[in-house]
Image (cartoon, rainbow, N blue to C red):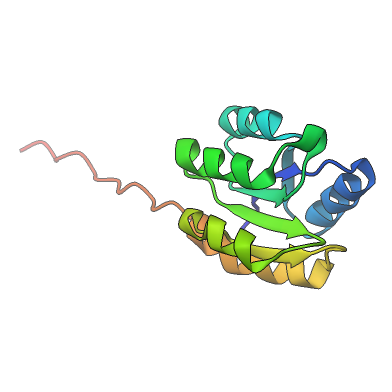
Length: 136
């Protein structure tokens, strides 16, 4: 299954690398953002399947705050990426059911594994189609 992914990362080179990796894995980059407010707006407009979220964003904004807002408003889960993930952050976001955690630099193998595990949760049940009654 192809996932539509919103990448939220304040470092342009890392965002570019993540986008290339996502596409190489056969998924679609739905959009990108570098700060919390822009991430929340983009998630509402683009409705991605998942958000790849850095913890520390541009202008001192918080990826955790953005992920909480995105999950609360739109029900979209986040995959957190950071060079520094501690127990306090993990405990704070437990309530929003994160997809997982990846340390920077992100390993394509680890990203492939997490996305493959997450993809089935994105499948929407097919609407049942019923044939119209036959004339009697």
